[in-house]
Amino acid sequence: MKLAFVLLLLCSVGGMYAGYPRASQPVEVVSAVAPVYPVIALAAHGSGDVVVVAEISKSGDVTSARVLSGHNLLQKVSVEAARRWRFSTSNEDRRQVELTFTFRIVPDKTAGIDRTPVFYPPNRVEVRSETVVTTTNY
Image (cartoon, rainbow, N blue to C red; front, side, top):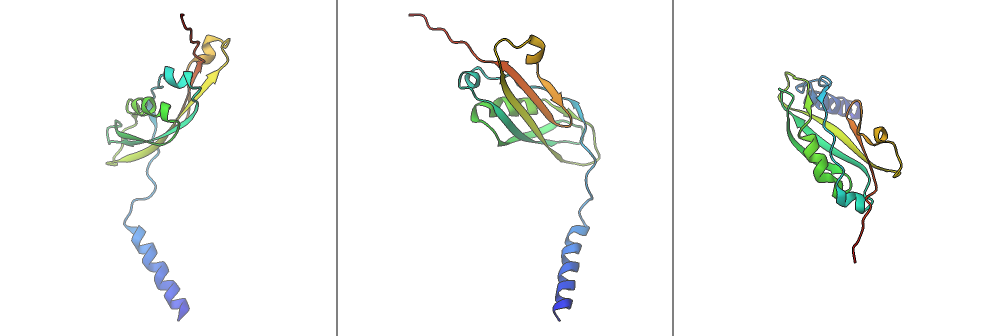
């Protein structure tokens, strides 16, 4: 009796997922935009990862973006950058992808080339900047 119940349960659960499509085709990045490191975040020494979920249309445009996690001072620029990304076209109506924006403060004497944003496939961009030097006039 227990065996029959377990088999019935497995068949019903398997049937629930039978109508859903298989794993979607991979999402390929056509163009990626790096956010600008906000001055206020630099002054506050804000750094770390911001994870954004982007919803993608058939044409590859980002239709919406929302933050899953990350520093509050870095979230707005991350969402704005994510909305400017472009992806490969698809037959699927909607696709979702997680994008990670890593903000890193580098030493002040770092060479210019080492301060440029870097794209790490498949969906990560590292933004680097020096600390902000503040001066006060009395």
